[in-house]
Length: 385
Image (tube, rainbow, N blue to C red):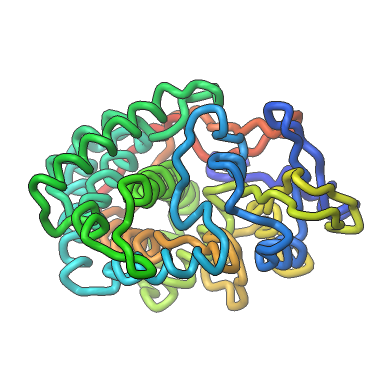
């Protein structure tokens, strides 16, 4: 088995029953596994809510490590749409050429550095710095700020291996408190400043609302982007013919990105809280219990995807749910897609092949079931053209 392979641990349960039970800090979760059921449940925000106790829809739960509501992630319609209308134009800026030019310069500098080294540990020497430096473009903040964000590590919110350790969460909260006060005194053109000057439904955003948006922005696209970039390097190292194909067929680049994010599914699942006794997959779920929308399982559903465990770079039909589905689809998807398009374009132009020298897999424990989400570390040798 190639090192970049991401197995599907959900197949048996998905085929047999469509759901799986898991315990999460004594707050059990019914995992929804089939593509049609995941999309149907994600669309039904009245029965399966996001606006529950802050942190409860995340799996593993963050109830014990934060009290600040992430916005608009943990808000349901119709309020959700008001917040989304406010911030969505900002998160569409990656479509602008000036934004792409700034991002391209960062990506090129990181690639040049990696090629000069020859051998890199991709997670910490490439993906983490790239994600943090790219975030300065999304937030319209000075690039020097990325040094602090890089020091936070691959997960800005949870400590490795301990979902109940709130140390990192407190650190992020302290950072947001400090930045909000700084920007009040010296407003600029960054997202903090824009939010503090914004109104929603005829009133100014509160400090907690501003911090809620910013917490989501810092936390939501961090380990997912890092996993996406790292897994892509691993895949291309295992499949050198794909490097040549992407170089010779740039017209399939966007299709390839959608296929890679389907296959990797950087975020395994996201929870919802049930608002009334109901059923999913003919399985009863009670009011105030939790379900999870298992994106990773839905993305391997053979009733939807032909040869779901294979990467088909020019896959024609690809209704993946890696960026979510329904009202709460990922605000950062445009940024992630733009980053990956520029990165892959420049990578295949610069690199002839890559070799995996050694690696340590990152396995996510789902109460007796394990899923590979990427790597804790992976050393790769880059062979330039």
